[in-house]
Image 1 (tube, rainbow, N blue to C red):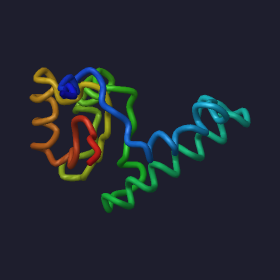
Image 2 (image 1 turned 30 degrees about the vertical axis):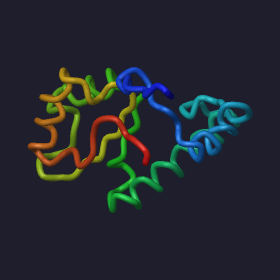
Image 3 (image 1 turned 180 degrees about the vertical axis):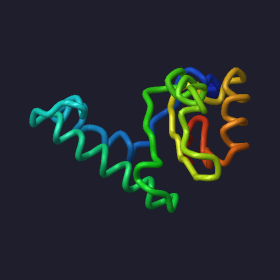
Image 4 (image 1 turned 60 degrees about the horizontal axis):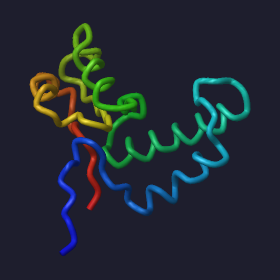
Length: 127
């Protein structure tokens, strides 16, 4: 019998299409997108392309899509002054990885949703 993996708080499998799309940025274009050198500029263009694709899919503005490195950064962002979010009533789409769905973050995301700032939150799952 094949075991069933249930520890999705620790890590999740990567969709093969995502892995394939990421390969150039693992092997060739690994620059810091905040840097002004050619490596960073190439990566920054890819990040902005991804931001545009997500914004288009969600019918949002590009500046409303914020990427973070994981659950802790997402939670800290959401817990900042005025939750670090736009004015009340404006939509805001925040995507974080890692453990965004753990119990400790639920009040944060609940408060952000209450004010209409999050239309999607927690871990992104494929399938």
